[in-house]
Amino acid sequence: MLAVGFTNRNISELVELGVLEKIAHGRYWMVHTETHKRKDYKAVEVGMVNPEAIICTDSACYYHGLIDVEPEILSIATKRTDRHKMEMNFRVKRHYFSEKTFDEDYSIRTTNQGNYKIYNVERSVCDCIRFRDDIEKDIFELVIYNYKKREEKQLERLKAYARRMRVEKKVEDVLYGK
Image (cartoon, rainbow, N blue to C red):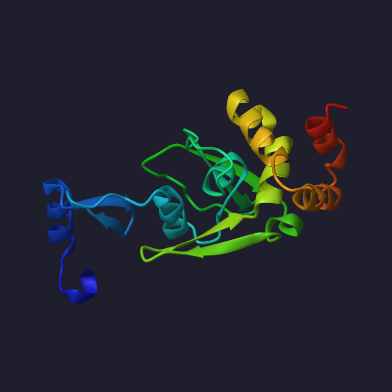
């Protein structure tokens, strides 16, 4: 907006008038009464604030369709060394990952409002099992129930991923009640 001639004062006035909604420093949504934010707007906003952050655990499961209700707190993964401020207009739970495992098994979702990173479904389920104490019990159970309904081939991918992440025993205990 600055590049096309708006001043900081103009932008502040537009926020006060409700024409713009501030996301983070230098990032705004245009507010339209006839349009609504995307279902994944929170993920898009996280991608704007910290392009290296990755949507993970129960939040990733929501975006992958394993649960129908969006978790109250958006779960994101960052590297242990990442010190970006993540002050959002919604609650965020930050999970810190080692450099070694952080960049594995994610994809980039591209939208017309911005891009964001999200872990694949198998990694997200494994991470839900690893961080199950941080997730509401009913959401956790729904993630596991819905994942178990999937094809056997996908269960094999989950087991393979769990082996790589060294959480195979925990995953088997949750999936098969051992």
